[in-house]
Length: 103
Length: 193
Image (tube, chains in turn yellow, red):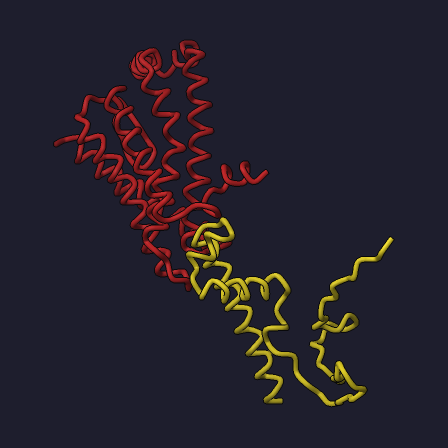
């Protein structure tokens, strides 16, 4: 039986102390080049997968909440409330990031 | 499972023009039942008996809906950070009123009406002995419909206003109590036309 490839999720928090993870090494997909450093993850990638999916869907709907609601078979306020929650989450993450940069 | 979810909490799935359209049908049906059954509104959910014209009973239900919805809309504008569409809040509140329709239908039944009117004339000390079974059943059904109405009305407000927790609960209760006072006054005034 052929094993199905597992879609690995990008970990963003440390499993030991729950601190935010950063990228230390980047590798070329063709040659053995490796770049080492301390790269911050983009804010979008720090969101949970469900929220990332919501934003992708929202962009694909040209930012129309009405269309998004119709596609997801949900009411307009339910979709708008979800978007407001994500905006709040993004603001918190960005504030946290700015505070880290200031340190 | 999804059907059950839609019945328990329809506002996650329907809103705006759709709830408003269904609500208007419910409103017209309620006014017709009230007119045929000789029922009148006395506040947001209370009903009584009296002979009013179709226009009067329709205006009473409209007043009860508009008073509660307007107070909830003002509270939502004050407390919520989200952009609230009035059509969602007013539509959701109108749809919630459909939960009261079975009570109006039962109350309009002639036998229940007679029993209720007789009971109103019974002395309090004789009340326990003379309580008809049908009226007890009606009371039970009315209680279920009332709970259903409050559940839908609250959820309709919370979803449309994007409010959660104590903020949503307390503001709903305050608005409802104020609406009962203002609605009672409005319906009494309409009955005098």
